[in-house]
Image 1 (cartoon, helix red, strand yellow):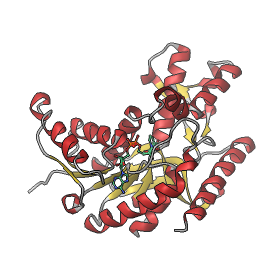
Image 2: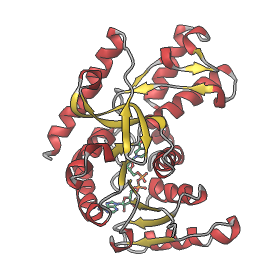
Image 3: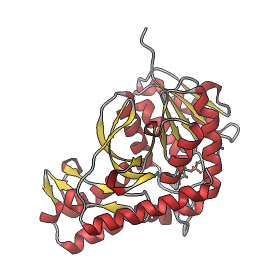
Image 4: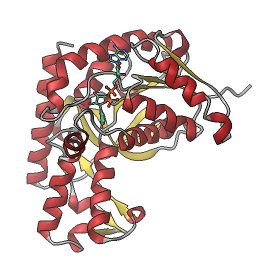
Length: 310
Ligand SMILES: NC(=O)c1ccc[n+]([C@@H]2O[C@H](COP(=O)([O-])OP(=O)(O)OC[C@H]3O[C@@H](n4cnc5c(N)ncnc54)[C@H](O)[C@@H]3O)[C@@H](O)[C@H]2O)c1
C-alpha cells in the first residue's frame, strides 16, 4: 500500500511554521512540527489543520514538543534556533545554535534513520556540518538551504533592474551562505543570455552587493526577526526535490570531497538533489577572482566548523 510521505519540521517559529504551511499546501505529505515551547507547535499545528477544509487539503499535521510523532520521516527540516537581530551577523549565532542543532538532530535522527536532513538554522553551512556529525548520517544525506534563497534574491533584483519576468531568470550563487557568498554574474542568465551582456558593470555590482546583504536588508526592516517567507519557500522546494526524486539542480550547501579545491567542508555548490539527497555536485570553471572568493568563503565555514567542537 502506498504510504504518504512524512516531513518533520523542527522549530515552529517564523521559518519552521511557514515551511510547514508551504509543504502542506504543496501536498508533499504529512507534517510533524516540533518546538521546545509548550503550546506553540500544538497551536500552530491545529491552526494549519483547520486550514485544510478551506484549501481542500487532506493528510495530517501534528504539533508536538517531543519526537515520537516524527518517527519514520522521509525529510527532516531543521529550523530550530535563534534568528538574527539588527547588527548581528549569522556567525554571532554559532555557539548557541550549534548546541540546539546537535540536540534536535540527536533526538530526531535515530527515529528517522533513512531521512534526508535539510538544515536551515544559521550559520547554515556550519549547522549542516553539526547536523551531519550529530546524526552520523552519510554526508550526502545532509544538505543546507542557503543558495536557493540567495539565488532567488539575486533573480528578484535582476528582474527589478531589467523589468522582465523573474521566470526567465536563472541565477548562480556559490560559496557559504553569509556575507562571503559568491554570486556569479557570468553564469546568471535572462532567457539564456548572461546578464553581463545585458547590464552595465555598476548595476551588476550593486545587484551582487544587495544579494549579499539580502538577509540583513530584511532584518533591518523587521527589527525583531529575520526573513521567513522566501526562506520557507526555498526549504520547501528542496524538500519537494527530495520527496519527488526530481534531481533538480539547486544551489545547496553540500559536503565537499575535493570539488572546487576543497574537502571536509560544507559550502554552497550546484547539487543534483534527489531522493538520495546530494546525488552529485556540478563543478564549473572559476576565474582566479571567483576561486579566491570561494576559497575565502569555504575557509570561513571551516573555521566555524572547527569552533563548534564537533
Ligand atoms: N538558511 C537560511 O537561508 C535562513 C533563512 C532565514 C532564517 N534562517 C535561520 O533559521 C533559524 C530560525 O529562524 P526563525 O525566523 O524561524 O526564528 P524564530 O525565532 O521565529 O524560530 C525559532 C524557533 O526555534 C525554536 N527552538 C529553539 N530551540 C529549540 C530546540 N532545542 N528544539 C526545538 N525548537 C527550538 C524556538 O522556540 C523558536 O520557535 C534562525 O537560525 C535563522 O537565522 C536561515
